[in-house]
Image 1 (cartoon, rainbow, N blue to C red):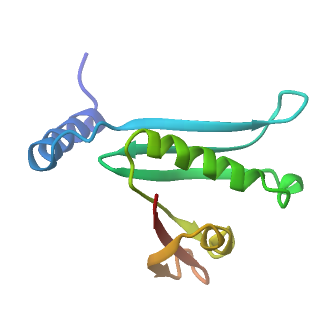
Image 2: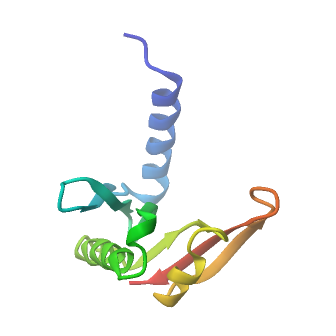
Length: 129
């Protein structure tokens, strides 16, 4: 079976990164919020590598926002990341998503892209764990 371009490029970059910065010991993590009917109504998907925690995706269904489910998901993920040795966290969010939410939990902006998408801003916050 022929290797895909994705595998060839990804494996080559991983090998180079390991040579330059040691193995990242990357591990995915996922926390899910379910309703009483066992329906997924929120969750967080991320990863830990080197001494960082990356929050890739976080979502809570609109009608469940406000009572603290997002905060709980984030705190569970941060706790697990610390257990794995992460000392810092980072993510990205848009102005129409939750930059104020992350700021209220101690995240500080380290970068932004204006007009990404047009008329909006993409924020990149981080925080020490």
